[in-house]
Length: 437
Image (cartoon, rainbow, N blue to C red):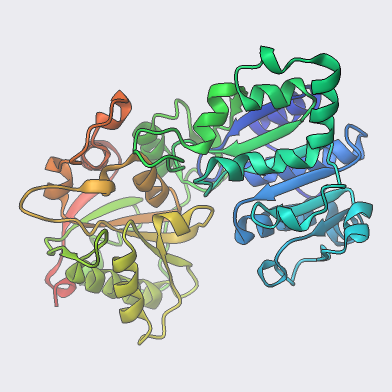
């Protein structure tokens, strides 16, 4: 194998090799959920724990990440021999050595099958899997979480008839475990949105954790020390830390930084909040944009690409209308940067991330921007530097405007972020005039 596991990943791998049923693995940003799942699939096959394994992800990009990790673990020839990518052909990455096929006999002959949740129906119900690994990221409907279990339905039916245990099970996941379904669900409840309409409903991962045993990965290979500490305290992970080899990683500019941007792009500061007082505007019935912030973010992109042309760059925002405005400004420039909503940013990373807050109004209503999951996704994408752009005073004193019956949602997370950045983990600087022009 060409990839090494850290102690957290090894512990969880051994636990799942020795245990059955349905179980959860919590993986904060950069902790290697995909790596752990891919290693588990290979070990299950190579050590004879299972005859075949299904790896399921909600999006094609996440399914491709499984395929990429498997290619690294097994090498080109091994992954070509053991694995197949199935489902939606245009969504598969053709650069990977793993073949793509929807031919049932070809798929049946492979030991490890990678597929998206939506494409499971393309697999014949006559193909049964002894073990499943499910990436929960992005799932917002309960049936998408449970649909892989149908590919073990024969086991379920046989056990129900022989053991008659349906009356002893309190929920469908417990029932599946009793009936021989073996599945590992990997995800992060503090990045996943609720599967119901109310903000205090459980996410898919929380639903799994409520019903099963689980373990947590605590070592991130993405976030440098200061950023890992911020994310750990913000989301209350209880022990997230940077891997030693990346803990001291910092942004390094290739060329001299313009004097006007030096305070913002200070290489010694991992987290910088640029206090900019732009006005929000409503764009449609449920989205917002802030033109002043959008212009400021694009100007920061221009300077970053000038001083560090090789660095990857993403701009993340909670709001679709802000993403459209940012994309409109960026399309006229020769700058390579990803513009993402917090939903689209799941599973992504970049050397430098700019987080556009957008909300700024006299009523101090931050709305959905005050949610744990959206902010946590946005602040945990960066490998070197995080730049937050928006009104600091608005976030520090903002109101979410909703109070669920679940007490954990009564907390205003935008306020928590502002306090942690200012007091402990970063710096707050006033936006220079150049960002307003």
